[in-house]
Image (cartoon, rainbow, N blue to C red):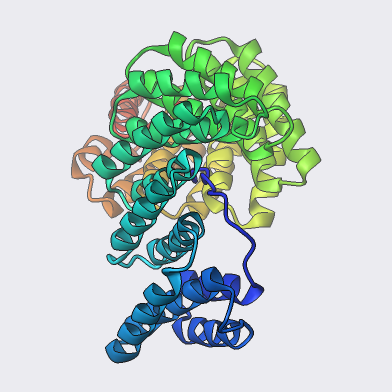
Length: 450
């Protein structure tokens, strides 16, 4: 999740200055030099001290990045000379733009420019500007993985914002701080800052960012076994997402559906899944629709509604195959094989299981396919349908050979021979192999939605 910007109060600047900063951010250094040349050509030497200073310093920076140190030094000295007549707040804002451009380019010199911007802001006496510069520097530090620096700067930004009475800056600093704390495993600190940010975010500008944080807090709580806290965070995230951010809302609905499934609340899981499907269809997102249909099919299967499961899963597989989502189509095909087994249609179940193998790409998919084939083989063995059991068990054994799971291959060895007196022993060995397969794969993966 991207961190929300904490914008400073930048005075108006010529378009060429903005174009130069954009070129620096994109790494187009020669284009940046050209943009600053044009900016300087259009500015009077007798006036526009702020703009000329910004253009000179930025051009010097670009020359430095190109390795032209003599031109870089000349431009920086000229900028300092021009800025002796400029307002500190304007210079600070311009310096912040350059620091942000450098941060975007991953240049280590960015810190020097951030420090200069903050010192200029402090010299101006403008507390709001100081809070904004500290917050922006902290945000960029967080994105660069410099957690200690980020925490110090974001806390400074929040404190300065409180002193200035600027709730918007405080809220943005706290949301960014919560992200750093959450990534560091300090969920409790993150939640406290999220709470204050929500209280101060009177215009609702940070609702989507805060909802995204709450989803991550919920994932941490779920992994720690605190499902009640996870559900509380997800419900709050859902209320914050509203209709303004479809992606956040859909992530929340998927997580809530998965959480309900873990506690076997099939009705709630289906309710959230239906809301997710409706949102995806209204947004024209076929990928999310296929995922939602897959999960709804799984929910129906576990809830004992095979007809509903088959309908949902079939639609999911059709969409997934049309989009080239082979892993999702393979998972849906495995689930359809389970539906077929439950209905007693074992030949059809074998067809779906073999289709899943064809669609599978990675090891996890293949292991899940082997487990599904063993399920079909075990049920066919019980029913005495050797023409289904043999290819199912041979297919599973071949997958395990490919994956070098010799322990499972040994369990399955000799299972193609069919005799009346050996049927019970064959079924027992198949069930042992199926149990062993289940120990290395979780075909449903519903809980991964959190």
